[in-house]
Length: 190
Image (cartoon, rainbow, N blue to C red):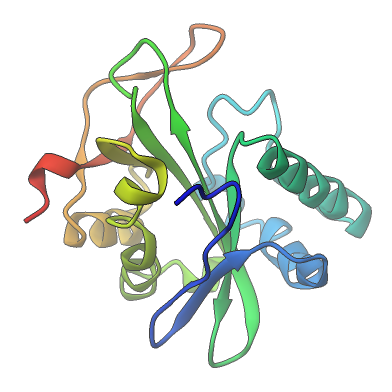
């Protein structure tokens, strides 16, 4: 399956992951203007974007870029829909990273959640929709995602899903080294 020709919809009993729609704007603005959530977003190697958006215009610009990125095969951005409230409570971005560092042939996953969902049980439920499936969706040998040391709930969820902290840096396009990445290797999946 080529994820850039047909973006799947994934779901479990609590959440739906689907491509970002224009109608998600108001809900996503609540996520990206959430001052408690923003410090947990992975902004590594994002050309200076801090992902803190406080206007509909800025949120729409970001969403338009996400669609352009998908159309060009750079990355896919899924909206995370809470089935109970029918609200979009975050996004997951993922792409196949092919660079000259430890994180090559890696599905790099970025999870942006509203702060009231930053609980291990919720993160585990969301991650379980895509973490293992990423190996097929992106043809990668490992999946990596960032969790800073203060993201205790996120780290608990990642460990419960089998992710392990890597001591290797992710090297950015300008040579900057980034740390705090947790990896799930295909070879370790039972």
